[in-house]
Length: 249
Image 1 (cartoon, rainbow, N blue to C red):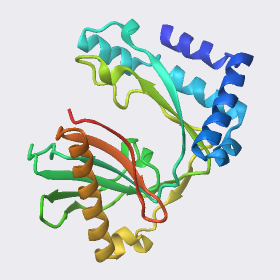
Image 2 (cartoon, one colour; image 1 turned 30 degrees about the vertical axis):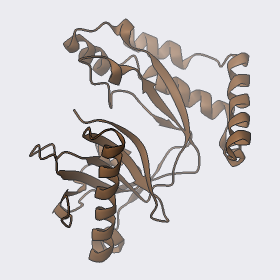
Image 3 (cartoon, one colour; image 1 turned 180 degrees about the vertical axis):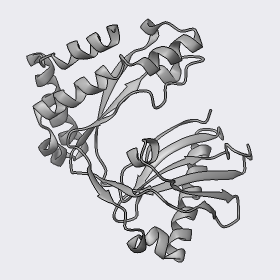
């Protein structure tokens, strides 16, 4: 089909010298101005180009086309940029909904947590995430324990993320339709539940879930009280990072 042809042609592209130079200059400039020169060491021209092409190729997929057709939008309305970021070393990944999507309670946060990178959570890895609810001024309640057996361990590298205008198009929910590619692939490991602190240490678990719920409410407040769909991770030092947030649909 035409989409397969488009993806094939994108894979065959070679990086223009001007684009390669601009990317390298941008990495150096950001490193210098933001005190993050270490990130320049993670940049590899071929890895960057291979990942960028895969992100662009995901624009020409069946799912975006079907979603656009349902919304009555033209494929020409869709634009794609590639956002380059450092890949955080994820001890845990999480998704938070600051309004419980199952009960529509605006005062109850619903969250899901998995060990490793978030692709375990949003991908097709079998099993369930640890899920919880947290009402305001009440302790979090675990609603389901973790049963996923896959842990995607990150490597130190850059991630090339899809950054489309799909989430800004009226009637078109573009979230999750496009690929984000790591310069180096995740290492797939087996979750050892009997050694996972999130499972074995109730005090640690409650503290972490409470912190996540509190962060979710702070993010919601920062966006004027609009319920938020939040993605993030917890690093090996148990610091919480917000990767993205968007209005909850």
